[in-house]
Amino acid sequence: MIYLRSLLFALGQWLTVPLFSLAALFTFPFSLLTRYRVVSLWAKSMTYWLRFTCKLDYRVLGAEHIPAEPVVILSKHQSAWETIAFQRILPPHVWVLKRELLLLPFFGWGLAMLKPVAIDRNAGRQALKQVVEQGRARLAEGMSVLVFPEGTRIPPGQKGHYQIGGAWLATHAHVKALPVAHNAGEFWGKNGFVKRPGTITVMIGEPIDTHGMKADELNRWVEAWIEDQMATLAGSRAA
Image 1 (cartoon, helix red, strand yellow):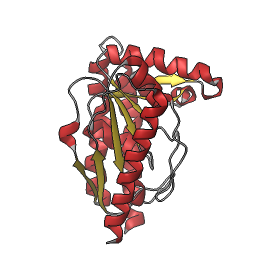
Image 2 (cartoon, one colour):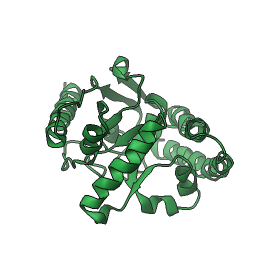
Image 3 (tube, rainbow, N blue to C red):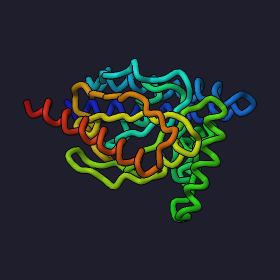
Image 4 (cartoon, rainbow, N blue to C red):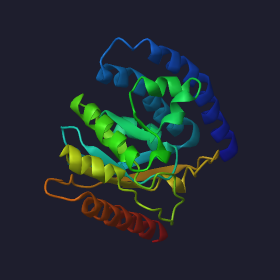
């Protein structure tokens, strides 16, 4: 039944992405926030579809920590789940991502309407400049910026290298950083077709005032907090 339910969820995704992507193109004349509200309807609907088809739900701890003003969100990255569900859980935001994703048919078109912070990952320190320039512009438009510091999806129980880009943006734009941990990879693995039933836990930390902080200091603090929460989630599962 798990495979059948996962197939049903996938069919729902495949059938609706082209429709929402084409609808997203018609939001071009409107503000970025209005575009987000329209485009994110797809992701929000998918969280309900996931719960209905795969019996996979989530709970949020620390939602009261989400500030009203735009922030830089620094999150653990384990699966595709968070790229969908965060659009329902977190305030309006754009992603920092590799610009090649914008070329993907349908999905990339809808993504482009949200004006993500699209960077050339091979540009070295120039990529940091791109993050700060584009990130500041999105923050000024009232959007938070979501960064996965590890850069790629990391399987449960493992830790990747925390790159400095997100911390660099937060400290140079003088906005708060919001750390987020979760265990989505336990239910929806990296590149995984199968979605296992259960409840994903999302843990949101207190926003960090970055004034006077260096980027590497903030990066270390965020890494320590996220990995500590991941250990707590692993411990509660083992218990």
